[in-house]
Length: 149
Image (cartoon, rainbow, N blue to C red; front, side, top):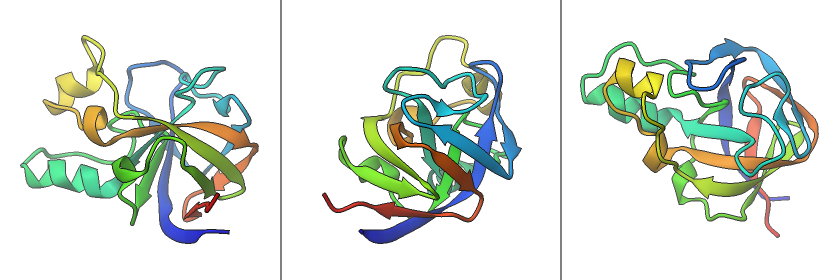
């Protein structure tokens, strides 16, 4: 397969877009859809959002308090991998699922709840988005493996 690059430290879900997500212990990620029950899931290229704990820690070091998983509306909070350095097209195995990196960063929409509450958002630079290629369950603690194609 590939090398284990990191692990999932939180799975976060929200029924509506633009709100802070709630943590869940595990989630079902459906092929060409995303996290079942999440507002961002659907037939498009940004089905799942990932953000590294290391990026959140950077914000905390800047003195922004109260940051925890899901604050940036990411579905998966990861550890041990520099997500925004993965090239678009990279395939990653997360838990039972397989994802393909489709986008690095995004523009925050106007009136983004996160930017309002947190003061700034790191999703535009350091968050990544994936499309689900293989359905399965992801649990907190699952490893993230980069697949050598």
